[in-house]
Image (cartoon, rainbow, N blue to C red; front, side, top):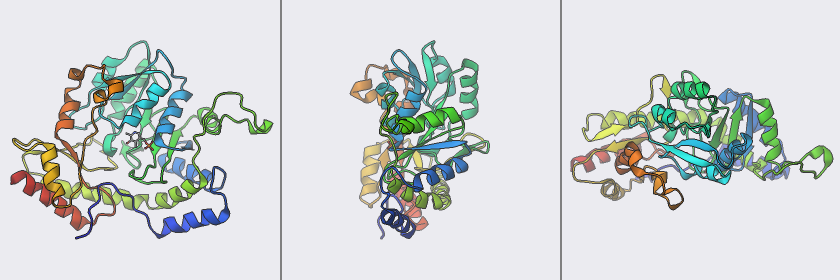
Length: 367
Ligand SMILES: *Cc1c(COP(=O)(O)O)cnc(C)c1O
């Protein structure tokens, strides 16, 4: 049987071709034509005026927070179930993350809890479209507008997802994407910020380049970052980007296969999309309410069949830098962590392998 992959990247001839073209051009670093081409195509696809490439998704989130002038004394509202990189950048700028619990059906930040978490110090709301599933952006946008608090979307897992026909990445004053190796498309490592605000875009483009005023040579009127994507990464990104429709179609198909085979297994719940939302299905995931087997046990039995799985992100409040928060305030997040499981979703897997995985899950649960 072929290897089953959880989230391995899918790289082929096109990637080799573009990378070779880049190497042959000698423009492998932060100058070169692939970078503006990737940014332009990305902005066009998402539906924003601009896209600014970065060194990683983490750098993108840091830069977005910095660009909004968020700093010490400020608060940023963020879900407690997410990857650590949604939260650490809030700490980098000296601000305080304010965690909110998730909605048990979508697994995303609960808008009602967001509203309750707002204080006079709240400077941004940072929704994370977890595992590719869009947040309730109608509700979050309404709250954001009513309170005059900007949104920074963490769209690192949701490239291609949409809400009411609008792509994730268009709702915030800025949105952040990641091209890490396990994301929907990869540049090896990299990120992107999308925005409709030309002024913010120009300023971020300047900040990522050490805040260098090129008209004056090596002159730096403010403190910047070296957060640029390389041309080499952008060449890989352009090849992957051409294949995005194929990847999204496959991931959607996997989610359908899991649902077809696992529907009716009474122990299983699915991550649900909001009405008129379309997930990127970055990672197909389920919740298992088993009377005797816990998630590590189920993972162990699946591993014996060569099926890789991953637990849901550990609630951020479990980590020493963030442990002062009251865990009792996040019951849905903790329950999801106890019972949730990410399933093999790499586009390298054949549909037959995904069917095998789904049937194996039934066997393990019913055994
Ligand atoms: C991957 C990811 C990031 C960070 O992206 P990197 O490119 O790995 O720095 C941020 N937030 C979430 C939710 C992610 O999954």
